[in-house]
Image: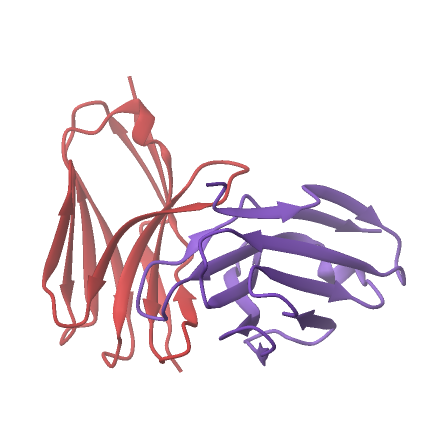
Amino acid sequence: NAGVTQTPKFRVLKTGQSMTLLCAQDMNHEYMYWYRQDPGMGLRLIHYSVGEGTTAKGEVPDGYNVSRLKKQNFLLGLESAAPSQTSVYFCASSYVTQETQYFGPGTRLLVL
Amino acid sequence: KQEVTQIPAALSVPEGENLVLNCSFTDSAIYNLQWFRQDPGKGLTSLLLIQSSQREQTSGRLNASLDKSSGRSTLYIAASQPGDSATYLCAVLSGNTGKLIFGQGTTLQVKP
């Protein structure tokens, strides 16, 4: 039981490049979330999903897109990376909204 | 808009001390409150979850309390150990979509 895994662990991008961050969970959770963590800003929700095939905007969705084609996977895409998207990205999942969210180890992204 | 504040931002104590971490929130209409631990360069680990109808939760040396009317929660750590050194994050669930609002965290250092 791996829990929540994230790929890649670290990535360097140039401004304007695109990439996809992959989150996978093996706990059969319905809900999945993408957060970003920045110094002085704390953790902020980017997008979330309440089930396979659904996505919704969080607090800071601009510049990101997401997809949930399979229940166990939640993808976060950056179409045209900007230096302001340099951050640590965390994925989380939960069975229902009022239960504990389980977090992945994070992806460190540096945009030059 | 829900806002979560944690004071102090950093705390250093000698091993063996009992300590209290504080969390306050501006809107008392919450579903639950969660305490997480984050080690440097790692993801978040859930410590305790208190539902809105509960007053406290305990796990080992940890005890978390919730006072919705005053918008406060405390995390009590008994007999602190160097292994407790980490950043402790408080988060509230205000809506039914699983969106957590995080505080900035308290970084704890327990000196041997």
